[in-house]
Image (cartoon, rainbow, N blue to C red; front, side):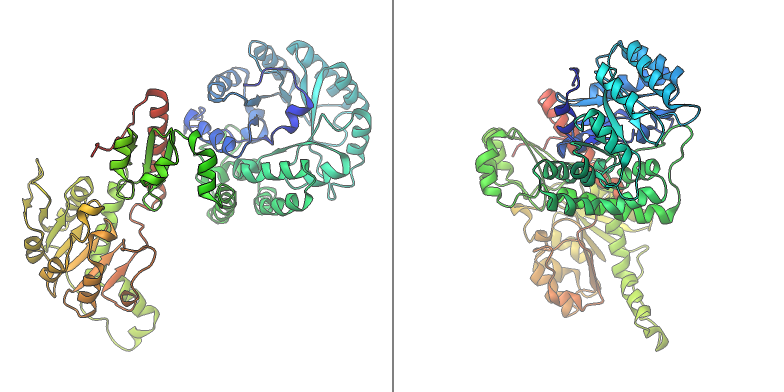
Length: 593
């Protein structure tokens, strides 16, 4: 954490983020959520955190400021700079700086008090606060006439003020006589453009400023930093093109509430849960505003994340591979031996998902690389989708929806369908998810049997040693086994034929588990009644023959795709990484082959 005296290079070395402060439901500060937000900012090379209005420091008491800083300080990394705010009234600010004297922060920003205050009184108060603190403060100029530029420049000259956050809004930022006069009196190096991305290019080019604050950087730090780097490189075209990406969020903030909209945007983008804002402020609850804001926030985040897409992965790994000790991957991307070899110091792989068949676990084991996945947290959502596909395929819900939309109901009735309750359910794979599916099926009074390599201890369902026999017996066969070479085409043509013309297949495991060509042939020729498929052999390419069939329900591999489950999966991936780096062990390790 930065503790040294403030220099102009400190101000221009990073975008000065003005973040919200996530809280728990009871109003206390949420350490985990704040840590997530700071990690997101650091990933975009933003390392200066100015806690002020967006974090509702206006309404922090003296004791609460101490508690907040005691939580935030341990979250800082080496090189981070935290700037706390004090005030806005003089009495509270004086007590707060007395408290800050016991801590190592090199400065604090004095929040502006609009009433009761006079320009000369503000100047005198800023000087007194710096004297009590024993360190210079940052002045925050938000309104014309708040403080006289002559006095402000004098405070900078005497060392009571180390920087000025300038945030007077102008219709045309290039036409600002107050800012022009202030620059003439104290120079531009210690003046911070304090109104986000919208006026920053004009402030840099028309007045020579070299630093700026941003709240929206909390959603897109890499993009905000791209503006900073472009401005310092005199690349105004890049700066302007990048700034345009922020305008939808900035417009939303200006239209409703800069603080409350940013608070909501950080959560809606999935960066961190922000909770309540604190006293005298309420969260946005209007569904229409939140729906529009979700779209804006997710779009800006997606554009931010696109900056991390490496155009030449092989070259990147050749140059940087030795620097990585851990790898995060998904079933889509996997990790083969070649990728691992490109990272000679790789020690751990954290897989986002329960099925890790696209990771070469054998190669990882030979290298002594630990491997984790995300079990349990997605069981319920996958089981929900399995039952949903089963019901949809049997009752023709999606097909009947299309029937109504086409206007076919005007011509006649939809054909009768197949009952689900009381039918026979076969489950291929009775692991955690398979048992969750069975639990749901019991609510439909279904008779349940299962197939696995060996009987599962502690379950009351009948074990079928042969998958063909299970298919012959059941009305519905749900497949939920691990992917990989060992289970490739486990559901073979023979198994599919055994289902018969009244049987249904549901697959929520991996596309490779089912002989897709045999399944397509059986469905087209009605040798089985129907299917519900969330996975395919060559995703996202789906056999064209399936598209025209009304007895098949097709989903884009979304079984675990809920906000809650994906958040839980992400948290488990991070928990594995934290545990590995802190203690050398994983939370959910995968057994060594």
